[in-house]
Length: 312
Image (cartoon, rainbow, N blue to C red):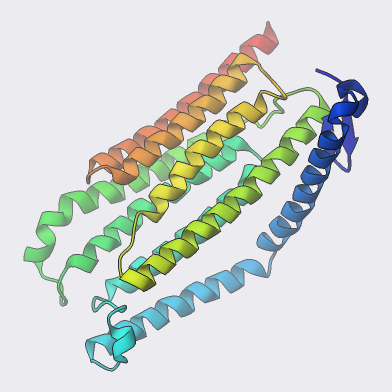
């Protein structure tokens, strides 16, 4: 590779090596990466700080209780007519809302794991999917009458058991997946590695902006029409595209076969999770477990391959 120019932790191709025509572009890229790194580091520090999570937890508790109160007032016809149409009558909608907001928090956490490790971010995707499966269990209750009767619940028992079992299986597989990680740099060059990390931070910030835009649009559609669309289906579609982008970006730092294969395999794992989100009950859990198994298998194969080459 051409010599690298490092500026405040962000490395790009040297202007001298690239030639005068590319000087302005390279300086702009360096400034963009430097600004993205600075902004990302500040946001990550605040998000992972000791003050953030108690506030997030308190907000979720307040939202859950407020939703319960609103639903009870709706059942007793105590809400203004303008709001009554937006508030459901089943108390389990409050559980669904709380889990949905928790998943949104986990999506933000996913963004802040991207820069540290591609493998950890894939694990975070599987964590979110396991919570989605658990949410689906509670979501089934929103279709049941209150008080709940066995005749209404019985037809849904197989799907609920599949979702809970699938979530548990993914949870257990993630323990082995995280234990198998070796977290080695994809390139021996310190400058290349810093450039790769800075680029991942820029991609993470772009993802955060996209996710916020999708969330705002989803909320606007619900308030305007009273309908919703597959929010997390859109999120995982974006994650597939970002995973493929990371595979291509990593080629700037390393074209080693086992690195490319592992990163491509992780992108394929995200594809399986995306399919699981739209699959029918029982099959969705099976696809999610298969995705977790594949992520673990790709990791073990990558570790074996790289270790064998290093020993050779």
